[in-house]
Image (tube, rainbow, N blue to C red; front, side, top):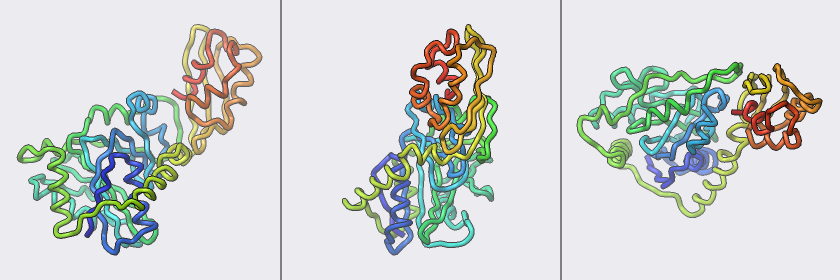
Amino acid sequence: MIYLETNSTDACYNFAAEYLFAAEQDVGDELFLFWQTEPTLMIGRYQNALEEIDLPYAQKRGIRVVRRLSGGGTIYTDLGGWQYSFIAPGEGEIDFRRFLAPVLRALRELGVPAEFNGRNDLTVAGRKFSGTAQYRLGGKVVHHGSLLFDTDLAEMERATTVRQEKIASKGIRSVRDRVTNLREHLPSSVTCAEFKERMVSAILGMGERRTLNAEQIRRVSQIAQEKFADWQAVYGQSPRFSITRSRRFVGGRVEFLLDVEKGVIRAAELRGDFFGAEAAQQIPQRLIGVRYERNAVLQALEGFEGAIYQVRPEEIAQVVVD
């Protein structure tokens, strides 16, 4: 086995490293990564981002949103936790036990009585501290998972709690189990950095340690921008969904019924008991084909000042998106 140190806390960069060694380069052995991220929300491949996270809150807090290539639910990660990845030859059915075995062994060596719940999670004392996922690419299997060590659980809960609105989606919703940090279950005090080193050493054994060379760094950076950091990669892959957004203003209630597909508004209807000028009837049509994000909606509403009595275009945009 080879351990690869990416020296990056950018989720897009680390996902790009997975992609490089699964699809483009073969190191001739099983590859293992152990990495951290700045505060990040990782969306599953088949999920609707807006159904899984509080996007306005994430943007306000500077929490990055990234879509990974594997299925499963949304997870929150920060510098208090760790991610790990295995890249190995493999075809056929998904098999979590193969890659969870060395992780469980390493945790038990640290004194954590961790267990596999039979699906794709690791637990301790009945509480979840790790979720895992897999995907196939280039004749390889990529297995990756999270390890909550000292993660801000309050921030995780807040960022993944969507306000109650009328939303119907064909996406797959996350199941938010009770979670715990591993730090609470270690028999002795261990820093986050010490935890990483002990986990890597236990899993790697006598294997080889490597870092990316200059050409690999260049290619990983390119893949990160093209396949993971781009708006289309995060929001353009969302399943089609319908949403109803409304707000009451001094001049009356404004309600939008929207169909969104691949992050773009495909149909829109405006309802309410507001007072509006003739231009108000043009607002739904103006929104069709626009990205479902506030700046794009606000730009589309340029010139609609006064269309709805006592409601400014920026307030209309907030109704549509926030």
